[in-house]
Length: 491
Ligand code: TRP
Ligand code: SF4
Image (cartoon, rainbow, N blue to C red; front, side):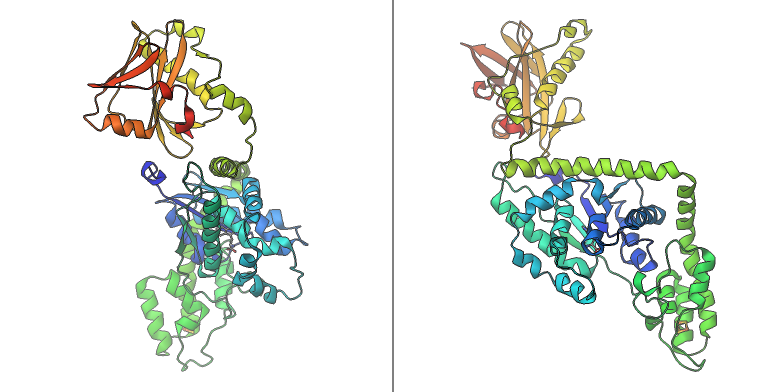
């Protein structure tokens, strides 16, 4: 069963390099969209600090500050750490591990042909970019993405080639390596973020390096100053202009209400208003939008511990998700898992028999005893087959399979299990014998499909006949001996 059905909230991942304080172009071209997405999707947003090192490896004195500034801008803009994982790339070491593993299967030609590779080198002629890290930039990005198995990656057009490479890397990985015959890394889709046009105050593209930006963190008076000093297109009042090609016009297009935008558009194109008036109208439009952002920024500044907690929490959430993928990646690539030799014998048929704890005698109700048996079994099996708790007696495997676990004590060489028609992929029946030993029968999907399609009786029995465990479900009776302690269905 595909993971999606179990996990209706689809995943979104995106990242930004730590360029320092973000400007309005970064905001309307990405961040504002992320803030909307967090209400619909399970989101992962991060600051790509390792990526900054691919070009700025020789000047890192401001890297940590810039990283922090971007996190603060994320939060000020309205990303909610309760709703999404907000984190710093270098805090989740698994990205680097996956990048390394990808480097084993990625042809150099794929990286050399990514258009940004040549373009960036041309843009920075004074920088020595003959470094592996720079060539590997988009491969690290592929690892950033695929490690979260996202459905969508919201980015601007400039990142399209990187997402395409990511999909190719996933395809190649899945061709080489599989788990139980199935691909490990789903191909994500690009979610192209439409980026409204926003010129810098000097009419060139808004960019940090041109010093022509309005920052998300600028105070109201600074915003006013920058707008009033913006370069516009109408030297004489009688000149007609075009808001499309004017930094102030662009601000109206993004931040003014319809009425005001119509007024200045008419006034500019018909030469009936002055640029001074137009600018004076843009100031409150922009500042009204930035007011709640300033409010959240002030709140953060007053709680210095809060920011650290958010970053820590984000790293933990992201690490957990990333590690889930890495367990599957390592296993599919054939790497020896730490501790797996011991654990294999612990859950294999040679494992010492598992016994219910003495404390089970103190349990007051049948239900409590059942819970103790399940917990005992779970503790052992979790070492090799991590299960997440979903609800009582239902657990989820790493790959999203639902596992129902039921326990029963022996009565006259028989065990009775009562449960609803199991909405699970794998059913584990724990039969506790007279001596307190637990015998797990791990019934795989194909067994369940065969037996629960007719009627789905809730009442089942295991009986031992000549030492062979037989399961009866309604009128159907079949040996389940081969499934005793066979954990392959939990992989
Ligand atoms: N390369 C992206 C940029 O320059 C930043 C980035 C790094 C990224 N890793 C990512 C974006 C993963 C999306 C997904 O904007
Ligand atoms: Fe720009 Fe407004 Fe002047 Fe037109 S009227 S050129 S939009 S500032």
